[in-house]
Length: 254
Ligand SMILES: Nc1ncnc2c1ncn2[C@@H]1O[C@H](COP(=O)(O)OP(=O)(O)OP(=O)(O)O)[C@@H](O)[C@H]1O
Ligand SMILES: [Mg+2]
Image 1 (cartoon, helix red, strand yellow):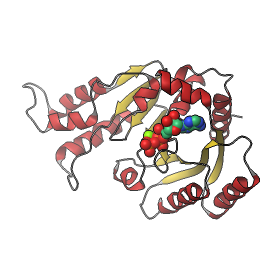
Image 2 (cartoon, protein in one colour; image 1 turned 135 degrees about the vertical axis):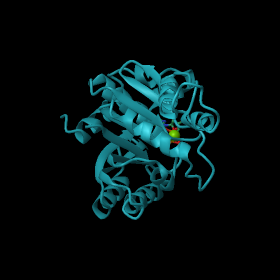
Image 3 (spheres, protein in one colour; image 1 turned 90 degrees about the vertical axis):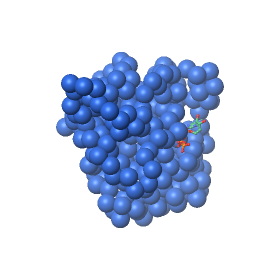
C-alpha cells in the first residue's frame, strides 16, 4: 500500500527543506520507490535536488485541452505525457504540478489528470507532497488520504500557534489525515526551556504528535548557496542525524 506524506506549515518554515531531507531518508533506507510531488506553484524542490524540470502537470493540462494526436485515445495520450513529465532519478521520481487552473474549473482535463495520477501513485511505496503554505491548497488536491501530515514550524511562539491551527483545521477541511506531527525547524541548539514549553503545550492541546526538532544548520545554507543536491549531505552532518532520527521515529524504524 502506498503511503502519502504531506508537508504543511507557514511560508518559509522549511517544508521544501524537510521534503528533500525526507527523500534522502527514504532513498537511503531503501524505502523505495518514492514519488516526490512538488505541489507548489512556484516549484523549487527540484533546486534542492539539483535536477532540471522539463514539464509540469499544469502544462499537460493545457495540452489536453487541445487536439489529441490521431490514433491515440485521450487516456493513452495523457499517460504518455505524464510519464514524459516524470523526472526519474535513482530511487525516486519527481513530478512538478506547476501552475494550477483558474478558480472554479472542474474541467474534464482535471478529472483525467486526477485519475491518471491515482494510477501512477500505485507504483510507489511512498509519496511525498511538498506544498505551498495554506491548507486550502492541500484540500483542493485530489489526495484520497494523507497517512502522515508533517506540520513544520519555525521556533517561535506564533509559529507554533499557527501549526496548532493547521492541526485543528484538517477535520473541517475534510482531509482524511491518519497521523499528524509537529516538526520544529531551524531551532536554536539547545532548545530553550521556554520554547520547549510552547512545543509541549501545542502537542498537548492539538491533535498532533511531536516529530522532533531540527536545528538551524549551516550545512543546509552552504548546500543551498552552492546549488548542491541535499541528497549528497553527509550522514555525519548534524542536520541529517537529527532528521533521520525524527523519520525513524515517525516510521517506527528505531
Ligand atoms: N534547519 C535549517 N537551517 C538553516 N536554514 C534552513 C533550515 N531549514 C530551512 N532553511 C532555509 O530557510 C529557507 C526556507 O526554507 P524552505 O524553502 O524549505 O521553506 P518552505 O516552507 O518550503 O517555504 P515556502 O513556504 O516558500 O515554500 C531556505 O532558504 C532554507 O535553506
Ligand atoms: Mg517550499
